[in-house]
Length: 205
Image 1 (spheres, rainbow, N blue to C red):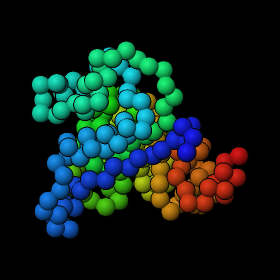
Image 2 (image 1 turned 45 degrees about the horizontal axis):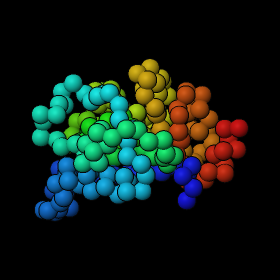
Image 3 (image 1 turned 90 degrees about the vertical axis):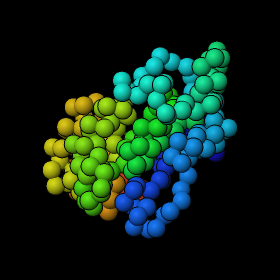
């Protein structure tokens, strides 16, 4: 594919309650898991451009989280101007988002996926848009991808997200209805994920 074609890379990793429910007794250690994914990404695109530290204040280089080796090497090399494919990382797992944010250090946008309480999770960071906003702000994430349900029920919630300078995307079956797409457009939702792209595009023109 041309380098101009962007990818949304959703990183799936079981939450503790999901691991218990499905009997997942053995999974990749989460830090190694993220490194393996970045190995593949960096193999096919230039590594991140060095920049000033933007990591959250509570995450330091003395922590047990290890920077990705490619990131460490690139910090010692001069920047090279090479076209990079547009990529965004998304994940329902808050710790995956935190690790990615730490390792890529702002060069690839990361968005937290959340169903915003549509189904209760053991991790409180996953149960509301307000909790998602707090995590995104603390970790310097680009924004969130939320289930459309809470936005449909209370469209003004989208204004809260935007007020914090976060990108907002939605997913869910309601997004296939023109009225819900128009409603979100009116309230400034950045991205509406749909199944019928042709109809949705005609709706927002």
